[in-house]
Image 1 (cartoon, rainbow, N blue to C red):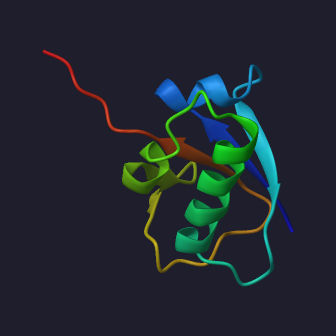
Image 2 (image 1 turned 180 degrees about the vertical axis):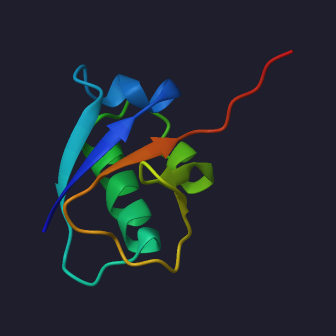
Length: 86
């Protein structure tokens, strides 16, 4: 299934449109999607630190999605890297 992923923060440098579409096998979890996205970034956007995906939050428009959750169909997901500031 196709999953549309909105990218924020430093991850946005991976695509000028600010989002990616990845093919994800049905039944995949957020943990699976996290690995697929990191692999995609290493291959197609080496300027982006793919390690950020490991520590980023994945969210729908309504909630944070934890690793054990199945990837929802027909939704745009957001990947939210950690932020800092003062």
